[in-house]
Amino acid sequence: MWKNGFERVEVLMERLSFQSYHQGLIEALNESDAEIYELIKAEYERLQNTIQLLAAESRCSRAVLAALGSVLQNKTSEGFAGARLHGGSGVIDEIERLAVDRAKEAFGARYANVQPHSGTTANQIAINTLLEPGERILSMGLQHGGHYSHGSADSLAGRFFDVEQYYVDPKSFVLDYESIRDKALKVRPKLIICGGSAYTRTISFAKFREIADEAGAFLLADISHISALVIAGLHPSPLDYAHITTTSTYKPGGPRGGLILMGRDCEQEVTVHGKSGSMWRHIERTTFPCIQGTPYLNHIAAKAVFFKEVLCEQYRARQLGVVENARRLAGNLVDMGYDVLTGGTDNHMILINTANSREGLTGLVAQRCLERCGIVVDKCPLAFDEKEPAITGGIRLGTPIVTRNGMGIEEMGRISGLVDEILRTVEIVGESEYRIKGSFEGHIKTQVKDLCSKFPIR
Ligand SMILES: *Cc1c(COP(=O)(O)O)cnc(C)c1O
Image 1 (tube, helix red, strand yellow):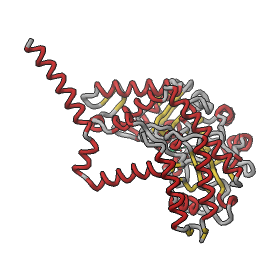
Image 2 (cartoon, protein in one colour; image 1 turned 120 degrees about the vertical axis):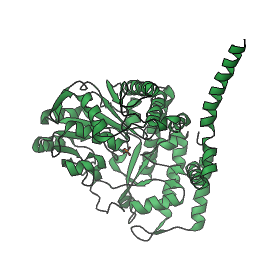
Image 3 (cartoon, helix red, strand yellow; image 1 turned 45 degrees about the horizontal axis):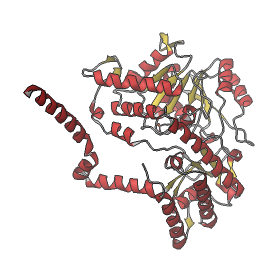
Image 4 (cartoon, helix red, strand yellow; image 1 turned 90 degrees about the horizontal axis):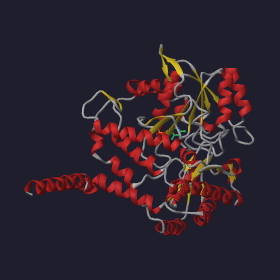
């Protein structure tokens, strides 16, 4: 009797202490650092009261946030599940295995590595798995929609590898696979990288693989921007076309971090730094100890939570909403006379040539005046754009966050109207300067706030 009762109390206390340890987190922060607490609160309020038309951001669930802010943050353990260098790794091994299994299920992959700290690091790992320093990469030009980590001059890959670039077609702004093929056969890269940060049309991974095979190159597909659509079956999957697929995990709505996936090529033998072995083993060696040290176990747990969420019908349905909203927004803007690159979009993002839309309007001024009125977008360098990277000739809009907040087609109508009103009314003074009347700013901000208040962050 006494013993049972005692045990029950023990179990209850254990549960309480675990819960209460994690429960008062935000209050604990407020007590120890009111300055940072207030700034985080200000950021929350900014997100709640403004329209986030961003393509490179989403929002994770509270469950994902909880995993990030847990005791797992403290665990130091190098190596992979089942082969750690440190003690006390039983629980985290289970967590990492779950994350891997769920990632494989979400993407239909044969191999998953959940350790990369970021999308950029995932790319560094993939590139250094396949190439020796000095070998050649063929990737999409940065201004044409590619990403820094694919070998732009200022990136690590740009320093250590010989990088050639392919571009979009100057008239259609769409990838021209024939010209990419010609370039690949001419420069004979060891690795071709596809996928980017500013490209609104469907990418044919099958065509890229054909080109890679013909040129005797490996293919890396970086789906950071479109991974949510790939999960939902709204964009073709690269898994069995690319030798290696990488993605950031926050763009599809998970925690900050990276992910490496493989399909049918995961057992392929490769020789790296004189050692032969299957490609996935080389990826693990390049992850640790080549590029990273201890994995972030709190992020790995958060990735596991996220990969479970994406398997729900609700997540897939939301991605359809993201694409429909983007199409509607793009369609409205085209109707109002904006120069939307390629005339529309197949995914979650929209690229607008601002100078062609209104004379003298740079990407920077468009970004600044929209933000001042409560609509947040990114300025964006466009292909064949002569403007400096800090100014740019365009903006990039995206619908993941507004859709996550519950907005639909009707709200896209209101938002495109507000964007147009701001860009039409602003007085352009220079490439970075503009004037806007206080009364106009207030009038738009009130409407933005009203709209946002109907869609509280959950
Ligand atoms: C965002 C992005 C990345 C970088 O991910 P980080 O986690 O921010 O390093 C890599 N590749 C592409 C195509 C991206 O859009």
